[in-house]
Structures are given as C-alpha cells and as structure tokens.
Amino acid sequence: MQAKDIMTPTVISVEPSDTVERAIRLMLQFNVSGLPVIDSARHLVGMVTEGDFLRRKEITTERRRPRWLEFLLGPGRLANEYVHTHGRKVADVMSVDTVTVGEDSPLEQIVSLMEKHRIKRVPVLRGENVVGILSRANLLRALAGIAANVTRSSVDDRAIRDSLLAEIQHQKWSPTGSIDVTVHDGVANLWGCILDERERQALIVAAENTAGVKQVNDHLTFVEPMSGMVLPPPEQAGKAESVTYRAPH
Figure 1 (cartoon, rainbow, N blue to C red):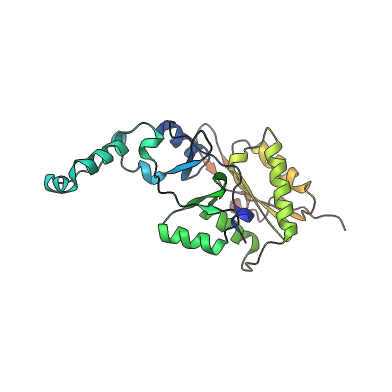
Figure 2: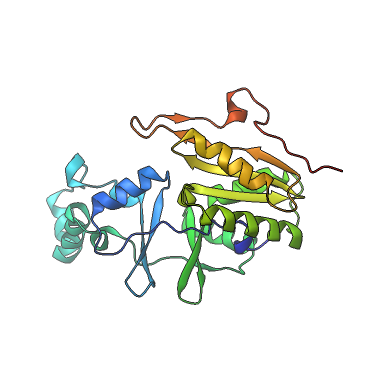
C-alpha cells in the first residue's frame, strides 16, 4: 500500500495570515488535531497542531521559569516563546520543520516517520503541492477495512475508491473535508464526521451506486452542530452494520 491508497484527498488547510482562532475552529469543526499551512502559491510552509496551543496566554499556561534559567536561555529564546504564546496569527505559532511524504511513499516508511518524529499526521505531496493528508486514523481505517490480512490494494479497489471519492466531492451537500473511504475486496467503508443525519443516507447511496461495490459499512460519526455532542457510529451503538449492500448475482 502507498500513501495515495489511504490518504484523505480533501485537504483542510489554513494560510500563514489566518488567525489562531480560525485554525482552532477548523480543527474543532472537522475533528482533526492538525492543519497544514499553505501560502498563496499553494506551497506548504508549515503545520499547526493541538500541541501549538498548549502554552497560551489566554488560558494562563505560559511557561514560568526561575530567573536564573531565563538568564541562561537568553532573550532570543524568551522572545520566541512570547510570540508563540501571545501571537494572533497562524504564522506565529506554526511549526516550520514539517515532515512530508510523497503520494507513492510506502506505508512502512510513513509509519517509521510518524514514530521517529512523534507526529499524528503528514501532508502528502505531489511535487511542491499538497494533494492529501495521511493520519494515524487513516492507517487504522485501512487496518480495520482489511482486518488482520494486510495486503497490497488491488487495482480494482483503488479504482472503486477513486470513483466514490470523486462522486462525493462533486456533490454540494457532501462534507468532503471530513469524509474518508477505504475499500477492500469491493467492500466500501465510510468514515468521518457528518453534521446532518441526512448526509449519512446520501453517502451510503453514493457508495451503493459506485461500480464494483459489493457491500457498504457505515462508520460515520454524527456531530450535533449546536452543542458539539458526538454520537458514535452505528456499529458502536449496538448495530453490527447499519447498511449492507450486495450486488445481484
């Protein structure tokens, strides 16, 4: 398997000039722990993650050190930390040393990078452009889709996934930024968050109508827009599978 087989192709991103508040709201809305920072030329310039907001003036969690240690650190280091804890723009808090992978990168290499750098997600590049995001959740979904038999995706499964994702992205009602799909042996698994329960059936129908799909498994999570309450996928609410579709013989 390669990055392009399981990555989320719709990239939710921010620009360096965006506010910290906007970045936080996007992360909460789409239930992600990090966002790529992309400039006006569509080039990746950094990443902003939950960890960048742990030390903030607003919640009084700035670092407090003894004066002797501050003296050893020097004014430059302290000034940099001040920008990070008080800055109002994404450029002030983002990490610029970003780990990336190519769309043809094997999963083994990607997992090694995640372990080495202790990160949860990596941008997937085609040249200098970001074409997807691959997170630990993507890896878990791929594992869940094929159970214990981790084998290379067939061309047919890849074609089914590409076709279904294209259909979803084409629809104006679809929450494309928070939906992912895995396919194994013709079984399509729908993952991600929806803000309207009517989107669930529409996504299922889109999967059922995709050529080559033998069965659809619904793992979608409903997030109540007003309260932010998260309801578990159907299989966690006492249903083994919410929808099963099999092609006629």
